[in-house]
Amino acid sequence: MRNREILLEYKVHPLWKFLEETYGFEQAFRMFKPYEGANILPKLIDRNTMVVSMPLILSNTNYVGTHFGGSLYSMCDPFFMFLLMMNLGKDYMVWDKGAKIDFVKPGEGTVTATFHLPDSEFAEIKNLLQKEKKTIRTYEALVVGEDGKTVAKITKDLYIRSSPKHSE
Image (cartoon, rainbow, N blue to C red; front, side):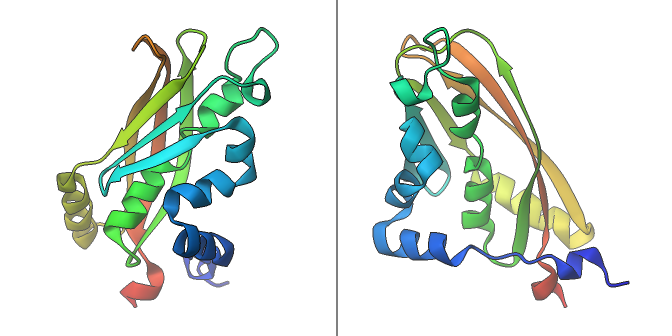
């Protein structure tokens, strides 16, 4: 039986690659239907930081008129992974391993989440993976309302390793 990791295909989907190269990172996300439908608006601030906002509109509203929990999670789902992929490069494989969202209070109006990873984190991961086969890193972000109060707390576990194709 072949090693499962060797069989794993790890590359950016051609459609995403085309959209990002043609329209830019932020606009490519806005064209992705789950984000478009919920009006999730990502903004790349710099190579270490993304800010994502979501105004309350009918398509992301729950039964009681506040932000739908699934939309709150969706607005936070991929951004730590993207920051890692952009900064570590193609020699590293990054996969979501787990996630948790704690709903603190109902989300009303526009909610915002900031995702930031310092350069020291990328250096630490690269250094660690010279000694270890893989690592799992945990990151947290807060979703805050217009009043600055926490609406939800997201915790993401990311699996990171040297890409098998580049470590042969």
